[in-house]
Length: 154
Image (cartoon, rainbow, N blue to C red; front, side):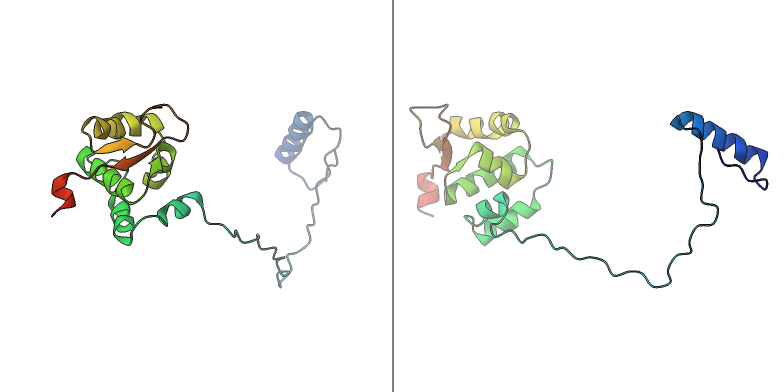
């Protein structure tokens, strides 16, 4: 350990403890650090390559109307179940979407919660239908809105 005669005893003890902790015999500290440059060196700019494709959510949102996109901005983490069902029906009326896609669009993490709390209820109420009803667990299963006669003919 390099010790200066001008070091305080406390400083020497700290340096000794640091050497022991690091498992080294000598601690060389630069007591006269170089001054900072008055002019900062230019930063190296390496821009990330631009993604030619949009994010997954943006890609899915392109299938939706502007009105639906605006509606999506109004939902939060805790949305009333009836409002969430209405939004799901609105989304599935514009295109067929899988459960994973709905999770991405609605920014929900849990597939099971989305299915159990909303999709299954809408299926039971005959407001949504599966695109592959004969194969309920099909990996490409998607959902679409069933329009009632009242909704078809306003």
